[in-house]
Image (cartoon, rainbow, N blue to C red):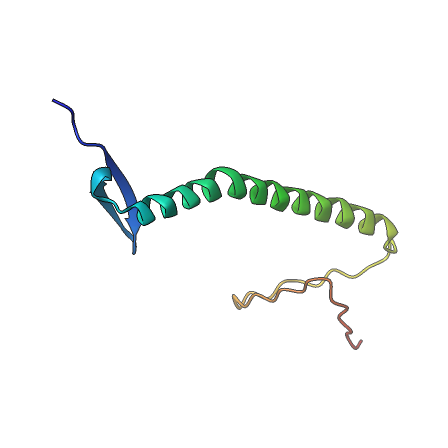
Length: 94
């Protein structure tokens, strides 16, 4: 006796199990596309992100060597507020 094949999918935050034979051809086609994305495209995107992060680390290291040796360290505020400054020039008055 042949056992039916099942597939588990996460849909709307819940894991569902379906018999493969009950899926429409369109659903099977969409699963094929999703499989392609997860097996082919996602690893490429992960590698691109890794390379961008590595490039940023190199750029930051090179920038550190170009900055003056004299500087002032600004203590972090303890209020829990987080401010993100990304490649912006911040002017301060002294």
